[in-house]
Length: 363
Image 1 (spheres, rainbow, N blue to C red):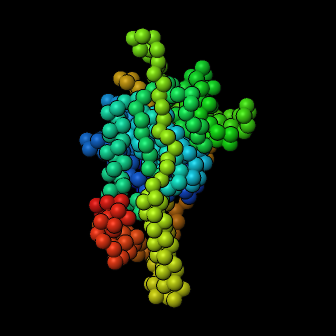
Image 2 (spheres, rainbow, N blue to C red):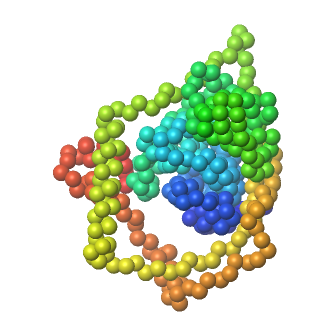
């Protein structure tokens, strides 16, 4: 069963189709999806299916379908400075995208049952910070992961502004999940085969919205120890930034602001050459399908898109030189330039301080 994007296309093509099908609807969510290449979270031998709208599971490693993550990111209504809890954080793909929108003063915690998956997530997080060309475009809230069963979290744990659960929740655990929310907070979870958004409107009041039909592996039930007692899981404490970290955030923010002002001044002065703009190729509307792997069984479901119609997309008039230009661009892409990196490296500072301001990045 095919996905939204055929093999061989790239992350931007995947995002274009998610936008076309109205799974991605806001600019902030689009930017987060474009900043992180989904294929980076796949094992090398499975990368050819990374841009299909399919869930993927290999051993304990699991990624939900892109359309599911899109709906989750939109439903969470993320803003800078909020606290986020990811129950079943897996590879860290979703937590990393969330961190791009929370900013440096947010809280970003994940709970994962399998220690080997946490190690995998930490490797992918380190790879993103050290090598991604997108990292310098955002003020990042780095995720913290802990190993354990999310049904054993200590009742003394702090509440969060946003919570997501990446496993199927039965009705008997609904109230337990709600306890993680602050007043005004949003919880998104698969509840009885429906991706559900629950907003806490008061101490004892809630608003519930069903988003779409999904198939998720159920939560792993808790087990008792030999003496019959359970060991509560303690979440990380709230982030307390060191003065050194706060200085780095402030300096990078100031440099970004200076770069933006310099670009604006050059544009006003007319020293920048106007870029040639062409209309984009039309995108063919595709049905978005989801395949969910549960152990050795495969569950397939087609999620209807309310924006689907029977009309084909209209062709748009393109510049007659566009195909020639596109061939040149596709075959000889210019390496992306990080103006922030260049500016930091040009500062009259000791090299260790420069590398600290760059988060010891490799590129």
